[in-house]
Structures are given as structure tokens and as C-alpha cells.
Image (tube, rainbow, N blue to C red):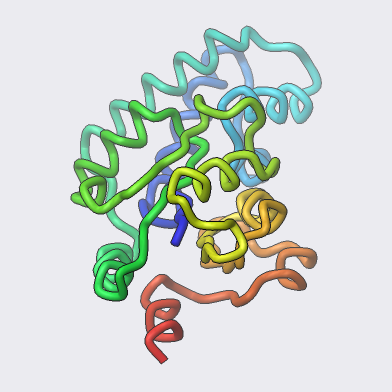
Length: 210
């Protein structure tokens, strides 16, 4: 199995939204919920492209990204809750002898730290992070790379995503992809192509158990 991280394993998207808005305020802009929903699932550089497009002007990209990361780090220090069923899903995968991969747009240093704090990192067999691919989601590179690290053909990997952007990445890589939506509603294309849409990881585990 290959999991996205933010919004899938960790309830961290709302922290990211607060961090991006705080950084944008410093340069006279706002990251509204409407704008942030377009950023979900993307790497920081792609988030900046989206933000600049939405506000209609160029921004000091390095400054905004650095500030967003600082704000986010402070929020994360207080702890990031697991999404309901995340630990149970990992336990279930292990009980079946399945390998566990993570494909996240977050940088490796941050991703590894957050998953370690959540007690999940020790179960991860392979991970590919946003700073380790040439093109971010929705490009399939990150899922193809993770499947290769696991030594499993992508077509034999079940990918779990919360956003249409991440889902498109997994599906395009050839994975059997399911959605467990968080902030962003599934797109019509994702609903058409998904192997299933579930209200929680607990519900997905129940389906796999059956």
C-alpha cells in the first residue's frame, strides 16, 4: 500500500492552511479557503504558482515559502493528530504482510519527523517526498518512484489519497487508487476512476477485511 501523508495519515491540512495564510499576510495577501483548496496536494513551489495566479501578481517566492514553513513548524510542534484509522490501517497492512509506502509532497526532513512523532515512521518500508522528485503531484513520478522502491509493480499497489491532485498522480502511475477525502471534495474525474471512495481509513480497512 502507498499512502499520501497530509490529510490522509495526518490531520495536518488545516495547519498548513493557517501557515500559508500567515505567510501571505506578511506580503499583503491572503490565502482564503478557496485558494488553499487549490493548493492542497501540491509541493511548495507549485503552491506558490497557484497563489500568484490567484492574487494576480508576483510575490517574493522564497520569502513566502520560508515564512510558511516557519509558521507550519511552530504549529506542528504542538502536535499533529492522526487521521481516524491511520494506526489501525498500518496495523492491518502489516498483519497481511503488505509493504507500506508513503508518497508525500512534503519535504523528507519534515515528513519523516512528523511520521516519527506520530509513531508511524517505523512501519514505512519506502517513502518518496516532494523534494525528491523533479515534478510534483499530479504528475505520476512520485507514485512510480515509491512503487519502484517497494519493489512492487505500480499496478499491484493500492494507493490511498485524500485530494484529487494526489489521486490523479497515483492513478496516472498505474496504481489502484482510492479516495478518503478530507478538505477537498472528489472531482468528477476522480469519482469516475477511483476504485472506491471512503469516509475514513477505518471504513477502508473494513472493506479490505471483507
